Structure formats: structure tokens, C-alpha cells
Image (tube, rainbow, N blue to C red):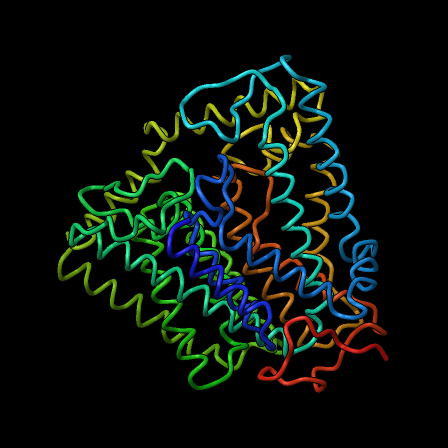
Length: 476
């Protein structure tokens, strides 16, 4: 175990036993350490990352609070909240145990643990167990946020936690960039101990592809865009003054880091986010009753100023943006000619064929690696698993609670909008069915708005500064 892992164990355990929201903040910021092995030695080939450790502690702390286990069961079985996700978890975990044995040797797959280009015959593997654990942990995270996310205090803590996540991603990205530039990249070796295939010293057109402490630039870029999207749409809810100023700085820094990753998936995600933002801006302009019209003039003025500045710079020096245009053309429009595209296309083709060869049942959770989240769900859990998982996500995105307070519904709506770029990026680079801790937390907070009125808490019961992480609102 490296010294960063040992130190992080101590900090996470301290956060777990501390009063207040420290563990929530740790949960979000620990997502920046995507290559740090938390197990001693090599971990026997399995990887335990800091965010997974933190999520386990978070779930344990929440469920240990009096009454929360009962609330968790209610939420898990509630058709308006997590019933579909609960059914998916049961089906997928059972499938992970049964399907690889049922179809062993029948067709080929690209194993989750594959380190080289090529396929192998389907057989039971450790990936079935580890991927089931990851999915169960994401489910448990969603469940816990759905039972503690009804108060305004908790929503305030989550917005603040997004700032911590941004800080972690930007900070690790700068460390990666600086150490590479100064040729002291070995200083980060203690943080890169997971048994992944790491692509950390790759350049694009002579420029360093920033990877932070992630396995590759694509993973880092999509993580940056995911947090960036949530913060952009959440920005009006930050308190005026220092909080909004910090949010603006974080948004600017994440935008820069997303571009420096030169990830095709991240670039597409930024494009999707821009389109969603434009549609949202138009909706606010034509709806005089919209609660987020207060800063509309500032946003439009800023857009006009930026557009004018870009136009002037193009007139003064038309070749100024040639490197950027060249990079986008190479990473996005010429992606089909790259070795990475060929490899990922093979993954998707083999994963789709596994779905067909299994008769639409799937090869089992953790049996296949692809580069498309929809194919991953279909190839792993079949038609039924896809109906349950996509049904749950669509349900949470389109339904609106009629009993939740106005601000709770507004918060949920902004989370839904902010999640869209992440869900689109999953379709371009999602290698496994797991939805990830950040998306799981957001979906849990969205589901919290559907808590029955009798279980909903008034935000007056606790202030953001004093709220215990696992404290749930008392029932009336």
C-alpha cells in the first residue's frame, strides 16, 4: 500500500466518525483519485479505489442511523423512487452468477479485465463478482441519497460538495500537467498504483493530454465535463457572494481542464452541454414565471461579450484558432481512423454479438467490456435488464413530484438537466454497466423529491452548518 493510500484511509475513517457532512465532501472529492489502489500489495488483481471505500463508509453511516433502514426498504420498494432500480440490481446480480456458467464456451467476449486487443471465450471470472459489487455500491449510494436528500440543508451540502469535486479534478489535473512539463512525473507514481492499463504520457499535436490521476485522458475529461455540467445548471442556486464566485471560478477551471484532456468524448459532452444550455436559456426567456430569470440578463450579456470577443479575434488574427480547430478535427471528426476507435468498435461489435448470441438474455454482469453504455447493459443483462435500468432513469428524468416543495422540484429539475451530458457521454465511452457514484448520488437526490409527504422534512429543522450527514428529517 502506497503512502497516499495509507493517509487517505486515515482521513476517510476520521470523516466517517466525525459529525457533519465531511464524509459527503470526501465522497465527491475522492472521485479524482481514479488510479489509487487502496488494498495492500497488488490487491490480488482487484482494484479498490478511494471513492468506493468512501461510498461504503457513507452507506454504512447513513443506514446505521435510527429509522434509516426502514426508510431505505420503503424507498427501495416505492414504484415512484427505486423499485425499478431494485429489480434491476437483483436480476443483474443473479445473472452475474448464472449466465456466465450457462453460456460458458458458447460465444466470444472482450473480458472486462482484458489488457490487450482481442477476444476470449466467455467463462465465469472475477469480473462477475467485482462488477456486481460496483453496481450494488452505486445502487446503495442512490438509495441513501434518496432517504437523506429531502432537506434544503442536504441540497446545500451537495452543491458545496460539487465544488470539492471540482477542486479535486482541477488540482490533480494541474499536478499532472506540471509534473509532466518539469519531467518529474515519477512524483505521482505513488498515486498510480491500481492495476489498470494506464495511458498517462500521451500527447496530441505536441500538447500533453491531461489525465489528472485517472487511467487515461478520456476518463479524466468526461469526469470534468460531468461535474462541470452539474455546476453550470446549479450555479443560480449557490448563495450570492463567495459561493457564487467560487462556483464561477470552478466552472472556468473545469472548462479549461476538459479541453486540455483533448478527449473526443469530453468534447462531444461539452457540445451536448452547450445545446442543452441554449435550450434552457430559451425556455427561461419565453417563460415569465420561470424562477431562474433573475440572472438572465447577466448570462445573455456575458454570451454577447464572449461572442463579440471571438469575432474580433478572428478578424484580427484568423489563424489564431487553427491549432484548436485542428485538434478538434483530429480528435472528433477523424476519430474513426484511429487505433483507439478500431479497438472500441471491436468491443462494441463483440458485445452486441454476445447479446444476440445469448438470445437477448445477456452474458452476465462483468462478463463483457464495450465502449457504449447501452450495449453494455444489453450485452450484460439482456432485454429485461435494459428495460429495468433505462426505465428507472427515464422515470426519474421525466416525472415531477406534485407534493414536493417548489425549491425541491427546482433542484431536481436542474440535476436532471445537468445529468444529460453525462448520460450522452456514457453512450460513447461507457465500458461497464455501473452508473458511477456521482451519477448515483444525483439520481438518488432526484428520487428524494418523490418521498411521500409524511416522510418529507422541512428545511427549517437543520441548518447546513450543523446537519449530520446521515440525519434524516423526522416524520410528521
